[in-house]
Image (cartoon, rainbow, N blue to C red; front, side, top):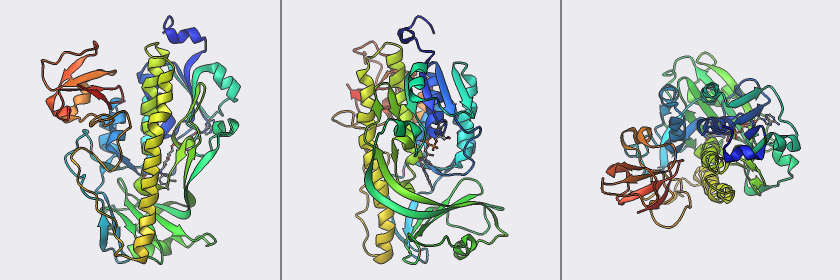
Length: 436
Ligand SMILES: Cc1cc2nc3c(=O)[nH]c(=O)nc-3n(C[C@H](O)[C@H](O)[C@H](O)COP(=O)(O)OP(=O)(O)OC[C@H]3O[C@@H](n4cnc5c(N)ncnc54)[C@H](O)[C@@H]3O)c2cc1C
């Protein structure tokens, strides 16, 4: 690795990562894949044992595919049947429709999983990279020391981010703050008692709730609490669902404040914030972890381009410029998805406009704002595991053999992946950057 432009910086590492949660672990794997000399500091010795996230989407599964985890994902993920809003008796009031179709990106739109299992997979993946130095059970050094250790520092240190605190970066409040009780159980038998197969938002004015039929035997409930309410008995809350102590082991019951916060800036010179350190959103769309993985996927290849001398530092400014509007939009959708539970509990007829089916979109989430004109900013379709035949870096994907790249970038021919264009220019993170 010596002799390349990045080595001129003189630091022992190219990248230092603080925190090995899902964001830091994804980033560390990507840095490993890109050949960056990386050091990771994580104060825990094992992944956080209690599940938080239990939903992820196609874009996120594809990042993990790129990292070589496809076989593990087949074991750790269950395809989700989607989400519906129901009344107190479980009758459907509303659902998001219009995007269920063949998996355009090579993965289904929604999966459920058990977070500690996923984090174990990501940590195990790091063992293959001799140039990724993982230091478990240690607190990250002070900021000045971190900055001496590596050319770039990425704080993936979670919602309370000590790095963000040290930099005195404020959190902007996007206007949501509620108290909820999160209950996780492991059923003894996944079919007993029979429970809905779809994620439900329960619009019951006596108690707003969310139910998630998660992966394997894992089931999740979230119950809205009043500000001053004592935490109710969990088994009484679960009784209407037909669950007794004989049916399941209680994994945990913990109160959380669901809020919507965004760091006022995500870059401080050679240091970046990512994941919960940069943004937090209520979990009604299951997008917090997904957003952290997207941050990692967006930042990692840019760090590699700059460290290897193929791009200048200005490329790194595009990380926040691209990711922040996406996170802000997804947070707004998550807040709206949560507020809708309360509104429908009061008035079950106050239904929102249904989603209009749109052949140009793979999900309800927005594209990246990378430039004008469809399909710029969208992920490349992935027929027949196309990614396995793509170069790791930039590529043109063309509709026919006659296409000649204007810039020497490799060309792959796959007419099913060009959204009807002659050719699309694909970035290392599989987003379409331009069309020919
Ligand atoms: C109830 C609930 C449900 C959710 N559901 C979903 C969902 O379905 N889908 C989804 O996408 N998201 C969901 N989320 C959000 C998701 O869990 C988080 O966004 C995600 O876990 C954040 O990952 P992270 O790596 O950014 O931070 P964390 O997971 O918090 O990891 C931060 C790591 O940094 C370490 N650390 C901190 N400071 C230091 C230091 N100084 N030195 C060394 N190490 C340090 C910590 O030990 C920790 O391991 C949910 C959250 C909750 C609470």
